[in-house]
Length: 154
Image (cartoon, rainbow, N blue to C red):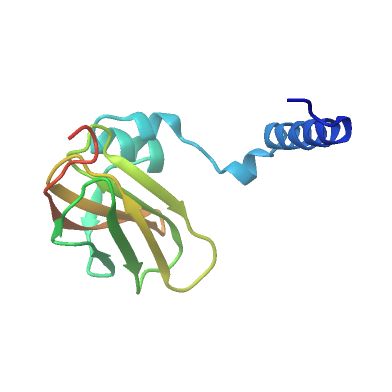
């Protein structure tokens, strides 16, 4: 099958522009990646690498919403809402018994209430922990999620 010359040139130029554009994306567009924290095998290692400390205190200001039973561990909806804490810097989500427990980290900017909603992958039943860094201290809340079909190697 022969391709028309103009069509060939058009597709080549468009493909080249897309490839060049994706290689030239600045780091701030892609986000900051803390490889050490996201590859850590324990919660303490991950928090130390990510936030500089693993000393958390439970707080009623941090509320985590997750299902009691997740029918599929590959897609577990999680919501974290923070009210009453000032100078919120970040919100991290940890699945305690995952091979790599740190699942997500969100940096917060500005004042007021902070809220994140995402879906995570869980390998088996465990606690999901929300860790909020505010005013240089770490606050947390946790909720057990029972997984019936594993998403991380299960």
